[in-house]
Length: 153
Image (cartoon, rainbow, N blue to C red; front, side, top):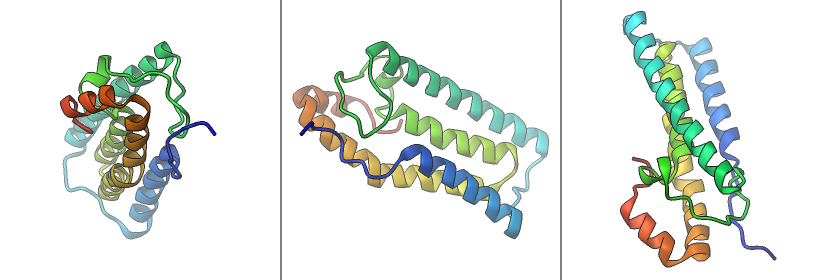
């Protein structure tokens, strides 16, 4: 049997569910941020742009290395260049920031909170399984990478 990460949760599904829950809670309960709309849209837009740039850089690195994006697939290469020099999980960071930025831009407190909760779910229930796999797969090379690059930022 092929060694692969033992990831049972699907990160994009978690991300989309978090956004949907944040939208629905605000729609039925309320939860507007008390900020000037222009400031919130500007700040949220900047966060969104940064998040998209991180995501594009990470996906490009995967593509250039011939790697597949689904988290439950085997890895042929340890990505340590580009955006991966700053964070070991740029796609998860980008997803979390997209939710926070969109929540801020739309003055939706719940979307910000559910996006942060999504990040916590990834941190405690997805990333550890991926890290265990990468340690088995790449051993000392991954250990050295893990020692010098943070999980998030």
